[in-house]
Image (cartoon, rainbow, N blue to C red; front, side, top):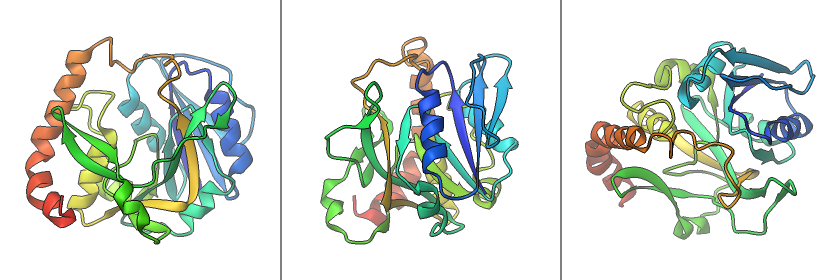
Length: 255
């Protein structure tokens, strides 16, 4: 079974995201919506479960809460404004190894029309330090590679899959202390995975589409409400992983 964790906070596209997952999954799934301090109606389907956090706790705690009640051999996390390809689930679970985190080709979603935009997708991402923080950058020079399941350096945290055993052994839980409740979750997981001898992979046999940044956010995930707190989180991630990135990862990738 694939357990799909959706941390949710007042997003109007939650229902369409859930329906896209239900319509396009080919394998055995459960969807766990973690309502982060609010209530809304959900699609009535035996594959959909709800966890309610009594107050707004932030994305990291919401993901941890969803994982804690999940029952699947595989874990997936997605944002609540995403569309998925037919068979996205089995395309990944059929090939993912125990020591991998896997994402997919990322297109851009027009959430109003609920259709994929005619823009070049993200396939590979390079992990860089920019303006005092880790971030992924489009890595077009690597796109000439023909491997359909291939290693990459960075991902947007909006969609990933791993085995539950890897989460339990390596990730443990997303840390709130230092990082804060909202940011750098993909950075934390990637570095933990590298330190444990694992890999971050992109699966080009399938895709998802994430809401394009040009569309208005329903909330800022703390970005505008508390920018100083997020700045502390970026600085913490850099202090924790910066030396390892420069001394180990950059030479490995010849960055």
